[in-house]
Amino acid sequence: MSEASADRPSASESGGDGVRGRGPGAGMSALTIENVTVARGGRPVVQGVSIEVPAGEVTGLLGANGAGKSSLALAISGLLRTSSGSIKHGGQEISNKRPDQVRAAGVAVVPEGRRLLSNLTVAENLQVSLFGVPKGQAESGIKAMLELFPELEKRWDQPTKALSGGEQQMVVLAMALVAKPKVLVIDELSLGLAPIVVQRLVPTVRDVAAEQGIGVLLIEQFAHVVLGLANTAYVMEGSKIRYHGTAQELKDNPDLLHSAYLLRK
Image (cartoon, rainbow, N blue to C red; front, side, top):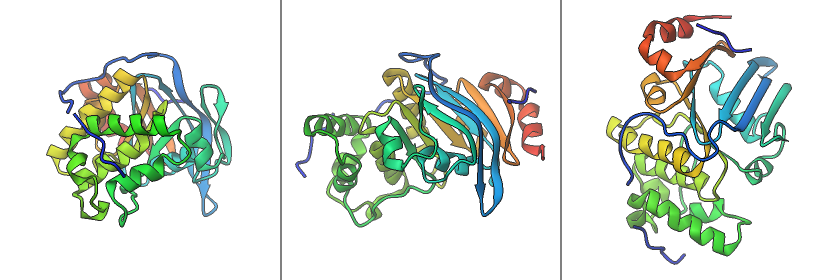
C-alpha cells in the first residue's frame, strides 16, 4: 500500500455496467489538488492532501464519515477557505475563489445532501444554475440534460420537494452539468438512495466522463460505488490521504482498503 504525498424542452438512458472509459483528453489533468490544508473551528480537517483528477476519467476518493472528504469538496467549491496548498483547474488557481468564480472557471461541485431550492420547480432550479449563461447555450444545455435524465421531463413543472430522492439527485447532477463544466466533483452520490437508483446513476457518471471528457472526482464512503467506476482511487482517513493507486488494486486486494480505513494519524 502506498501513501500519497419555462417552455418545456423535448427530451429523447444510458446504461451499462463496468469500469471506466477513457474519454477525450484522458490523462491530461483537469483538476490538481496539491498539499491542501483546510481548518474548521480552528482544527485542521484536511491536512496536506494531494489529488490529481485527469480529464475524461473518474477518480475516486474513499473514506469513512469524518475523514475530511466533504470539507475538501467544500474547499474545491469555494465554500471553505484553504489554509495552505493549491487547487488548480487547467493551470488556473481556484482555491479561495468565490463559488461563482469556481463555477465560471469550469468546476462544478455537487455537495452532499441534495441541496435544491425545494419550493421551485425542476425547470426553475435548472434556470437558476444557468444564470449568466447565453440563451442558446442554456437551451442546448437543458435539452442535453433531459436526454441524460429523461425521467425529469414528466416532473419538469413540479417543485423539487415533491420528487423522490433519486429524482432529486438527478436534478442536482443536471444543475451541475447543464453549463458543460470541465470538472465535476460529486460528494456522496449514493447517500440515502436505494441500490436500484444508484445503479441507474452510476453509468451516467461514467458516461459523462468518457464521452464529454469531464474529469470527475467521485467522493464516497461506499467502496463498491467508486471501485466500479474509477481508474484511480484515493483513501482518506484522519484528514490525510492514506492510500492512492489503481481502483483495480483495491478491488483485487480488499485487505488494502480495510487497512487504509483503519489507519489513524
